[in-house]
Length: 382
Image (tube, rainbow, N blue to C red; front, side, top):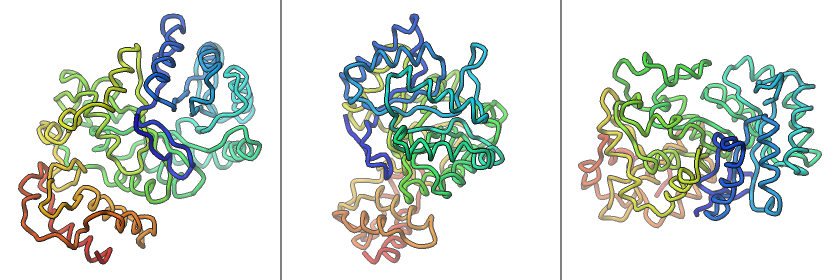
């Protein structure tokens, strides 16, 4: 298992992490089975958005004797009321739910306290104004949570939260279909048929800016909806009109700037094992570029997907990383020192480009790579 820094939190998390969708199956017996597989595979991070008290109790039992092996991302504002899930902004409900969650999980603290499901700008203002964010800060000061996060499907809201420096972790929906869609306060629009009825071109610029800003500011992204609820794995159900594999979906998400891990939902131990097998999969099975390039009604013309199909470079330049650092640098008003340092330690730099054009002939997306190399050389001085 590979591990990545979770932004600037100091936590190292497994690239493949565990969602909680299937844990309540088989009368919650699935919960312990999934944690057994997770431990075996080196998965050390999981998300708990569900407020179901029986599920929280099952997770608490599953963690006994191995709490130190797992990093918990659990959600504030996700409450259980009248026997069902509810997203709440009522501060008293939120407080009661969190304290109850600690008790059921048999935990003294959680590592990431995720403010739950904020997809509207006015809702973000509510979180700031009605004490929710202050409560999260109080919990952090008291050591009951170590880091503050936010979950969202809306890049406008997420960017607002990231740029406010109020959060350290962002749980965000990332896959090659969502990434084409404009910001919306209605999550259902991300998968609606009408959203894919016309030809779509290139990543939505607000989503691109969000990922690059997270990378620049050190906010770690934990990915939800990597498989689009499973629809992306089916040619019949996928809005792209073609299926991707588990490995391709994971590789796509992990290649986005700022991403630390993919929260893989699993309804069986076999499904979790399939996601964990990504770590040992050859590059040929992870390659998503040609699949994306063949999607009907969708194109990424001129947009670098960091897929490395342009390589090998005769000068041994890591073209994908040079381009990623260029985009990160251009996303802000000035070049962040961390980006400049990461670029500087590359073994070969854009200034070594001889302009042969072999990379452009290989690129499935028609990226003007030689122009990017020139821009990187001018910007970084190497």
